[in-house]
Image (cartoon, rainbow over all chains, first blue to last red; front, side, top):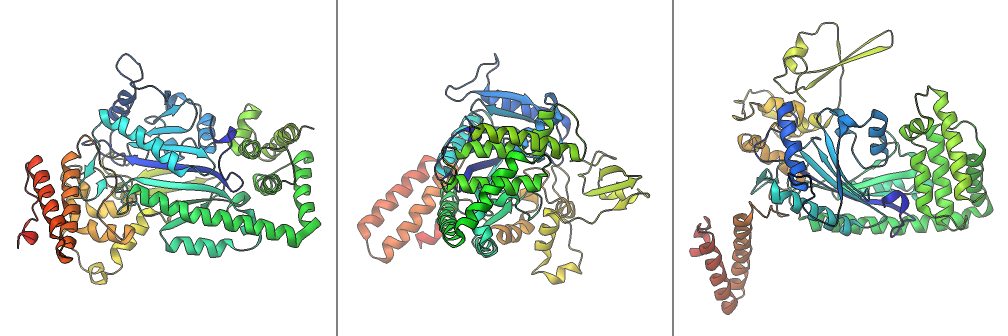
Length: 348
Length: 177
């Protein structure tokens, strides 16, 4: 099962761990300049690396489905993005792009994105090493059938020089309400950029981190080995997890009943409000997630809260409503969905 | 993405027109964009701006000179197109833009030597070369600390590896001296 319905280590602070590899096929122009016939060649080669000519999968264990983006309705494409199963970039050219998605929804091989191949493994909680082992195995399987563009000095060649070398981006998605409330985020963000890491808000544009959710990833892809890159991020992430837990504890001690009250009020609004913007929703669900992770609301699994968080994202709301919603209607529908979902997970 | 107009050069310019709240967007190459009159050119800040910025810092004199333009002989992309798009056209661009590329990679990654994973199928010779390089640096250290037994061992391992892929390491000379 994917990260939205499975527990994982350090889940109180870490929502997901993700490893992505960028690869290109030798002697085919990169997506920036390639023609539709090149894109077709790429899709065919990648598909044939997983399935043989009679359509049987070449290996056992992981089960893949091949999905052309042109066969997926636009709303479903956005849902793939909101569930972090595919990237926004992949949806820029749906006429030539495709994905291979495993039945557990943990592994996606994106075809004709910014590079010919972008493969990723997303696991719940803190599991960078396992995600790396999994995706490196998939990389080996594809490479048995496909020749990659590789340079002895520069490593795996990518469209953008910021990905060359290992082609590896490792990231952890973290819920950091404690550090945000105690105004420590800026200092942390400044520090991590000095050591080759970068952080951005997720579920929100630009620097605004909706719901205190941040994605921390490596910036450097050329020079260090994959293991070094992952270790580096792991060490920093573990420190951030500790700091976040300390901040939560301190906030609870200092804030006492007022702090608890503010979290329960958020819960009350999610259970009863009739109109809810994305921004308000993210801030409230963040408070409820914090309350659950500190044991204030017993008997609720964190992955359930994360599933509710995804239900409130724009494309998910649209899909549930079964059609086009305008302006305020989205916020009304979101409030409806969330009220129902909250009652269910709280057993009301 | 290719220019929507000529469908030949990479699209490096994003044009947008808004008439009565109706938005029209075009992705064009610079040449075709120059011919559009009723579009407003949007200032944007992207990865390509950053890359262009990287290229200029530390080489202020070059901003005023016009150096000979490198061009990839395979996909036809020239260096200024790359600077604008921030994306290479094909794997051969990495060869044709070699001299501009190394300072760029050094600025982005602090480094330009890949030491990670290697494709199993095509990379076996390369793996051997990498192993030889590692043994050589160990050999140097062994000689420095006068561990001659270890040095002899390493020398034999290097020899065996070099013979197994048929090529001479290339940079043998420094140790032969």
